[in-house]
Length: 200
Image (cartoon, rainbow, N blue to C red):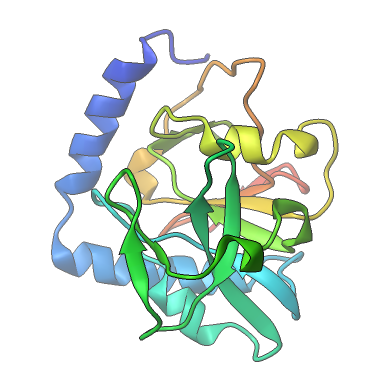
């Protein structure tokens, strides 16, 4: 059954759970998620993929980034003035600036940003998720607006949630504007919504 509690309350509860994890659990979780992301049946071998800069206890993606195939270009999201995300290539050591939310972004000109529909795969942060691929984010709607064109089709860019297993809930009541995920990778399981299954 979908969670009937209000979304702000669910966010507070799940963020507290996420932040309470130990550093050792975070490191092990990042390695496990990297392995699962690389093993996805639709994981690209070339093109653009995007991760995120982990904040507020989110599972980190550095282990995935460094293991990506050489033809892959890793990107980070950039918050744009028209209320959608675009993406910028980024490697460790490249310049970063803080956006309006205090999240680091690549420091590149706007005309060098990559549109969402050019990405092959995007790993999204989340506060909670359910086994049907419904995602609860921080409430700003950035990913839902950016990938609204994906709402009625299962085709690239594939959207994959990354989370700790403790962030799973039985069900999240989807809103009309929510964009479902193609998969969720946690430190213990992969939920592949193409295959409608979960496997350890």
